[in-house]
Length: 402
Ligand code: DOR
Ligand code: ZN
Ligand code: ZN
Image (cartoon, rainbow, N blue to C red; front, side):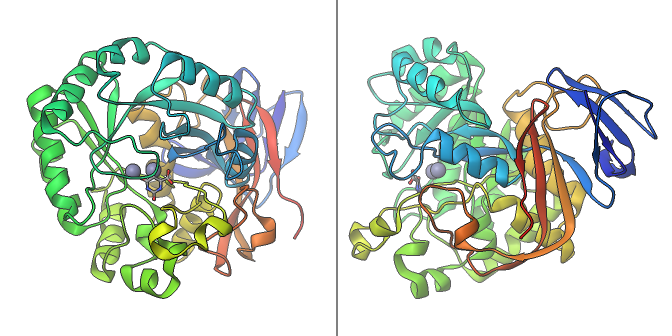
């Protein structure tokens, strides 16, 4: 048994000075001055949060292991306070068959981070979605409405409808990439919402980035549509103006939006209009990013920087700690059916993270774990960093003094 002592624990919606006794089976006791035998972990002056859950990463591996693999991606995740990742299927080879899902599981099970998987949808595998839904670790399906990395696109409306219908039958969540190149986001959001209404599919809108798209989705949610809204740190921190300046480094799909959209996303996040934040960790090497603009790949790494960025936002008063925990732990756990995760409770999993809200550091390339080796946030001075991470009670990360 381990006993975290002296920390402020985020428990039942607020920071409370409590001890926490846990092991690999879960959280055993929470209370003031616990009288429990075990290894004492002093955490005076620190804060304990439930492990963060990143509902949108691309951990590559297989034929793209030079960009990231489950080992490096996992180490990056836990260094960023993330204890569970949900991985996207647009790999080489794509995760669209039971066989590839099994091979991916085998790699992921050796990673320090816990995981769930999205299965991809192609015109060919539509009849097999029921079977894919029963594969262990599958939390949902991903449908790409527009062309992007990996070529998993379902462009025809009739096929999209069939995909929504078949996913609805499985009761899993359908995560949708609503962005055809050159179209306004809201146009594709509207199509996805209509399909969700007519088929009853549980819809998750990935990486929303415009006011119009968010508002349309939120109105539908208020009208009772089963939909959740995701945004990503790059839409909160960068705009199309930055993209023009920094070229391929900020080339991402969907593309960055206007400063007004960025400001609106912060409000929508603080007010609960947006349900969750996910990194959309999409690592590519700097060599690949150095290609001429048209040939450079879409995507930015982010799994290890999302929490420090959100903690910094808390220190600046842009976001409450409560909202941070909701959008990056509680909500993703609830939406994707991750049992006993997303909150600190007796009997729940000991996926925990200790943070130092006062620690100030520059985000440095040398400190990154991702195999792609860079971050668009290098040089950002951030206040608030994870210092220890536990996945199922096992310590998987401890910050060295730097
Ligand atoms: O920028 C992106 N990168 N958008 C996507 O849809 C895919 C992702 C990737 O896998 O690189
Ligand atoms: Zn996407
Ligand atoms: Zn993505």
